[in-house]
Length: 139
Image (cartoon, rainbow, N blue to C red; front, side, top):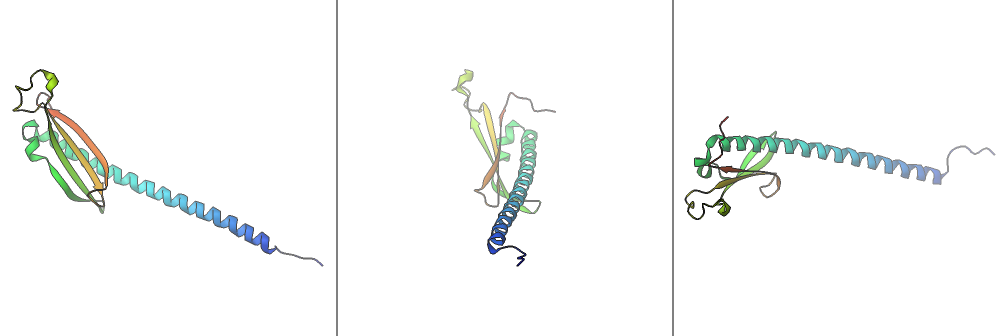
């Protein structure tokens, strides 16, 4: 008698191997898409933070501390909700030899901009820069 076809064991093994290959491929494409979306969000956040830092430079040292700070400002970039926070911190450098005589004007202002996606506490990107009254930011 001539038996043609596959046994049940052979079919089950091939179905299992096919399922493993398909699941691995789907997982690879899902992870790749997530990484691409994360990269796009990162580029959008950095462009927004760079624009904010440009504004800090344009404002000048004297008004920076009063004009720039903001907390969890909601922004929509490419249809995605984000939140930007800008903190300006005064730093008095005691090693410059002028402290405590120079306490009326801080030596540096540290500007830190953070960007969070989806919720204000989901901070993913941070940009910092220090400004001083001695530096010239003219272009």
